[in-house]
Length: 168
Image 1: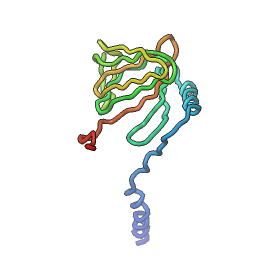
Image 2 (image 1 turned 90 degrees about the horizontal axis):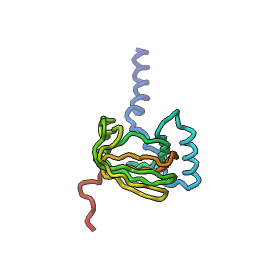
Image 3 (image 1 turned 30 degrees about the vertical axis):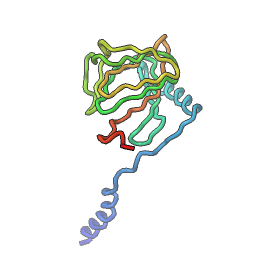
Image 4 (image 1 turned 30 degrees about the horizontal axis):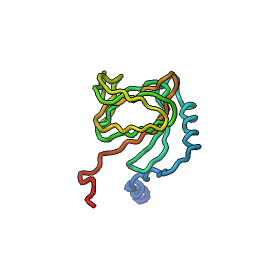
């Protein structure tokens, strides 16, 4: 009887905890220039070995997430099936290759593919202040230039709902 009472009491306390949905992700909607430059230093310090890419979060407001990408070397090419990707160059120079076909294509997860490079793509030179948006289902790859890192801000932009844009 005592064990039954203990079990009922444990369920009474555990059930609300189990039924609660996870806490929403924290929202951050502003970061100043000094903080962003601090992220560049952090990314540089966080780099492990010869890693071609280190990402640090900048802003978050679900479903949007802006992140800083410190890219001292050429990372694998990517293709996002469900969203476009906006790039803003914060430091350095390089090229963003888009289009063409992924070489050695591999599925990363349910919505993304990667490849070692891109065949027959278009190379766009980029420098500080330049912006580029890569449509969904488009291979893309960032290539630093001149032996120095290129630092970009990226933001994945999910497909809009079927009724977009709204009628005004």
